[in-house]
Image (cartoon, rainbow, N blue to C red; front, side, top):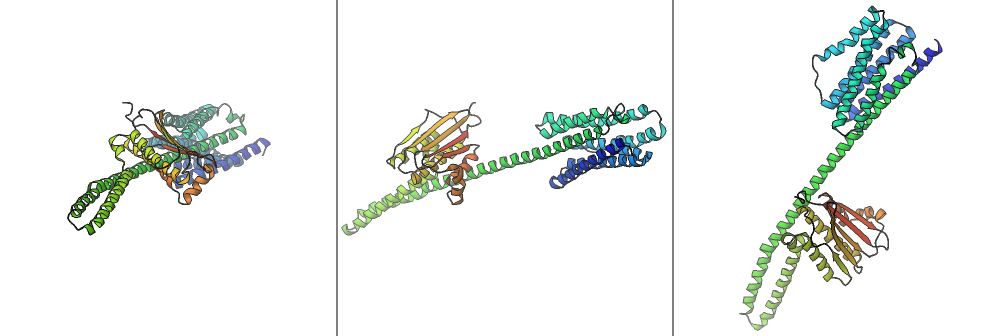
Length: 435
């Protein structure tokens, strides 16, 4: 065997090894994700491997039968790749006329190899068929890419378009040994390019799945927050309209009894009235915490201002609230989420920085409403301690993040030891805010 044949044989063996890995990858992806186009990619690479086996056998034995099968598998590989592109981009169904295309490679290969002596006449139709099928594969992936943002489809379209153009040089260069063994290495590059595109398709599909799952979780979170608030509203109304009324009626009855009993019992009745008053105050406090009436009656900004005012009245340290005269409209769920976030933020200040000055700022820009809660307390290492605190059962910030995320917002915590804590809460404006 001459040195050129040895080089060609080595290059073909390397290409066969890489093609085997490509086929194994595609079949493994099919098993994992059950997408039909992965299976068809695997079938195409299996046919391509059979093509390489036939040309290797021909190189060793110089028997025309192996050259015939090489040509057959070359054409069928191109068709398998084209069908893969159809399945991927259009979810195509098989049609009976496609058998004509499948029949062309074996029929023409027989005529070209066994019945024709003119090389160009024999090779021309086969090369044209191969190139058109490969270019059509690239066009199918390109059309998909133009309709869908997919880097995998982009890479596959470029790979097969270049590969289809490369097929056209066969009668002029490769068949005359000009490309030996570099033609094999160029084909290896195309195989690797196709594999890269396939892996990018997998990555794109995983990213789509992650986005879908995230959207589903956000929808579920919004639904849970809404149900939670509805339950709190129901409890608040029940306490206000039923329990509080019972206590008020009891107070009136006790007052009436106190006017008709002996002086020795009057003191005990008075104490009972005092206890009822305390119970009524507690009910009012609970109903306010469950569902602040200001949020329903006056809107978000007065409710936030009232919450800060109540917090200020319970402490000696300086507490300031800064806000414009009005805020843009956010959704009802976002209003509740902001109110609860401020509630939780001020509660944290009361627990961990009771003597520290606090500054609350409400602003609106870039289509979002931002609430910033800053204190000058002891702070903590936010970069390392947040997860540890949540694992230890301190779930206030975690609940805040979940509630705000449920309405499409974000929560950022900035803190370091001895530098206080700043919590920034963003929520989007209502969809019809600008209408």
